[in-house]
Image 1 (tube, helix red, strand yellow):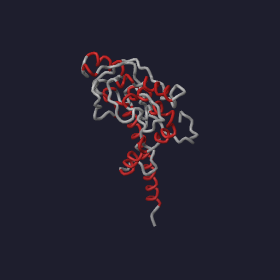
Image 2 (cartoon, helix red, strand yellow; image 1 turned 45 degrees about the vertical axis):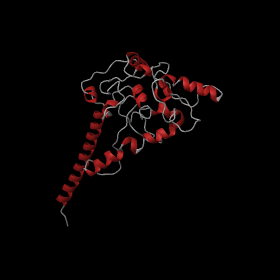
Image 3 (cartoon, one colour; image 1 turned 180 degrees about the vertical axis):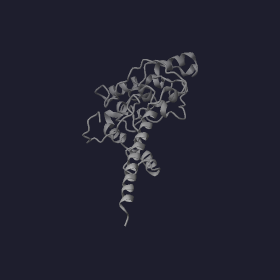
Image 4 (cartoon, one colour; image 1 turned 135 degrees about the horizontal axis):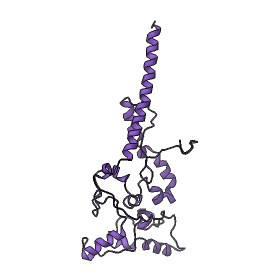
Length: 247
């Protein structure tokens, strides 16, 4: 039968381990927050952000203006014709197979559809480059994005959290930072579910790694990642949560 002293020692040891676990969890969460709010030097090398005046595009509409199909189609084309002057028409112009979905390019991406280019004079022609600057939403960090090339950098993770949400929407309207604006009028329920999913938060990755390496003693994952529209760390809560925002 174990003596009283070893039992006390075991109790102290368990207490110490639990305290150490809490400290490690706090350290991991702090590290995630610091990474998300990394300084500009980490996000984009030594490049300084370009000061730009962004015009936020309105949310993509559920319906186009007009009563008849032809009127709605005309509204769609008015939002796309400038884009089609340079960009090849591939797939469905609305990115939806159903013809019932009527969306112009700028409904989802933003930009200025009234600007036109002239492919006949060549992509690199000064007039076309100037038109592209006026039509496209430009990045804060053009060098890091290889602008004006459309080839995205191999690793844009931290850079995305420093970029303007208007530019993120321009290159990827489905990004969770801006998906509510680009797709929310029709798909808000799907977006809200996806924002809390493992595919969004990577909780399985962070939780599994933390458990397997002894950072936390349980598989009830509380570590993950989520970001606001402005790239700030976000807190994911259940729709039924009764916690006030400050908690």
